[in-house]
Image (tube, rainbow, N blue to C red):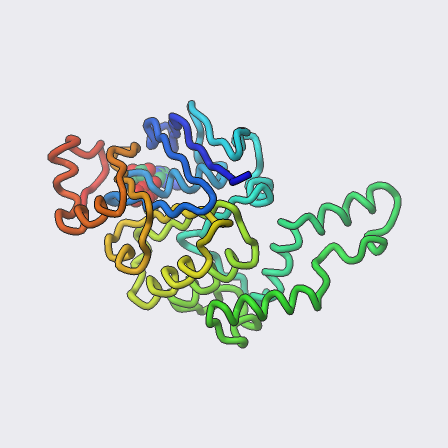
Length: 277
Ligand code: ADP
Ligand code: MG
């Protein structure tokens, strides 16, 4: 069965301010959606809420993966269920190599870590089922294959996670993480991060090479120019905490032509404290 992420009449508040005001959206495995809108409209709030960030309070509505609500799940459980969120501002972890970090993450998402813990809890040893990590050889092989496919230099795996990374390298790290975790639905929030063209291209090439029948993607972006590189099948315009328009690729072209100001003309002033640009 194809995985399906459904956001249903979702209302979310941050610090007692309602930010999402009834979001409805369905993303299926194999589909590429673009969510576009001016800064401050609540796009990142949607991404963080779906990923399970505790700062964002769901007031009503639901987020379902394959028909089941994920709102009660912790962020790591959501990842295990097949969701991936690429962070807009990834954290640097000096001392932890990319390879090490990825092995930990893959092991957790694929259940190695839990199986080892369960074995120990039952009085056995983690050793009986192997280590709590994906076996090194298997991991190395997969990592090498995927880095080749994404044209990522082999030395990258030995560098410390996001430590001194350029914008483009951070994006590369993010795409590699996505390739390794093999999510069913990925949300990539690129907004406001001031991506240069190089970084944008990395994201686009990565997404294009990973998108297929097994991956559904929601690309969140302020910039129409991302769509010069990625062709989404579905385009949504986000404004004042809602999707105000949905359409096909033509809608992206229309946005490119007209910018965002016409949205204000059509859908009213932005809510207090939100700037349009
Ligand atoms: P976008 O990603 O579309 O630029 P955001 O979701 O980042 O929009 O922000 C929407 C609104 O929510 C803004 O008014 C912002 O100030 C507010 N907001 C978002 N996250 C937080 C937070 N962690 N704390 C306080 N306010 C927030
Ligand atoms: Mg944002």
